[in-house]
Length: 78
Length: 349
Ligand code: SF4
Image 1 (tube, rainbow over the protein chains, first blue to last red):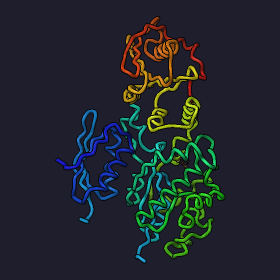
Image 2: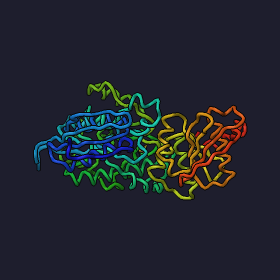
Image 3: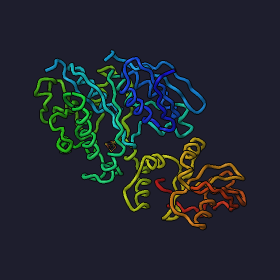
């Protein structure tokens, strides 16, 4: 799966988004990030953040207690 | 000079910043948004705690506004730096613990730093002259400009015609004639402009953008400061003040009692930091004890926990008490009668 993983379980929104942003900003276009979250609000906020920045949510998987979101970094190659 | 000037906008999620951005976009300026998270923002977190809110996760309005406007939104955490603003505001507080004028100055200063690092040309905010009793009086506008260091790089598109000309106007990036002169607390001009722009929906302008404008929340925060003898807090404190009933039966300790399942689950996450109580013989919420307690205090805490359990009418309720080292013991206690629960034990109720 994704080469990069971000564990923000236990953090409440908007912190999962803020951490996602910090991580994505270090990645190159086309790279993928797997994000583990427990706040259900992140399922709405992270995709919204991705849309306004031109990143793509490739998949989400909702478990009972936690959710995984996979993001592909957008933008032209640097 | 590059062709298209770029503005960084403070986006809170409310209607005003949304309009300010659109006004500037209409003038051919490229805009990106910034949103600061102080820990007290209404946007975000609490929706995940209470069960009844969990079924309909609340959207983050700042992100939603950014999406409506088609601008990237940069979300910046300022929890630690904000402590100085909140605990020691030069201009004091508003009607509750909201240090609005200092807060605005701080945010504009942080936005200015961001603007410089990211090569933007000027700043915009949705501030409207005279809109709030605190921080948006006309005489406060220059204070924010001066103390933030933004000076004339800060443009308020909705009230610009009532304020001195700014650099973006002088440089010809923005046409002053196509800015506005909104003034006062009426929201009518904003709503009319929103409709003219074709916005059909916007977040309701609440009392403020953060919990510090809330009287109950502020009462709990001042109680916390009083009990510690210092204006100190951390992220856990901010969160705990949003959750549960807070009762202070004695000056040296308080109880945080979950009001429902969702809050119990949330407080579970803090049980290693606090002595905590559970009712064993009857269903009931989790109770955290904040402060130093002796045997009598714990007995009182147990009787209160029993009072908020389903065994409140029983003769005795069995309560388990676990200390911070994880050592658990049980007590059989009579629930405290309602008449013995003093109204002023409730903090911020
Ligand atoms: S309401 Fe809160 S966030 Fe908004 S200006 Fe006042 S102190 Fe700052």
